[in-house]
Length: 144
Image (cartoon, rainbow, N blue to C red; front, side):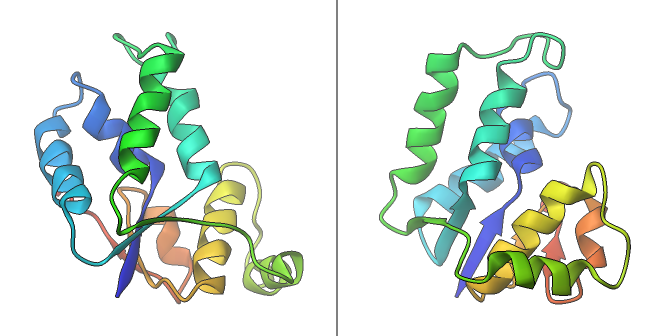
């Protein structure tokens, strides 16, 4: 069994100003502690770095070095993997997004969804309800 985390879970676990922070920390720590295969993608990890270092987004942003140290920590467990786009990604993206218009902020969501689909990862932990547009994903919000 495998699952993936969306960037909002990682950011929430880092942002002490978010009221969901304690719950996000506990959830992330349980993911990093072991169990099923924990999947990330580079776009999610780099979005994490972008968001948590931005002074316009967080009241107490991380330094770039601190953000990258966190990324290394996410990837350290033996059960953690980084998934890359598979062969035929563009065609898979076109097929997946043919049912509804994908633009703006939904583009990176579709990118993540298609990458997970290509690797057979069905479970995504996210606080973003837009992922429910992709029927092949089992979207779970661990912060509620």
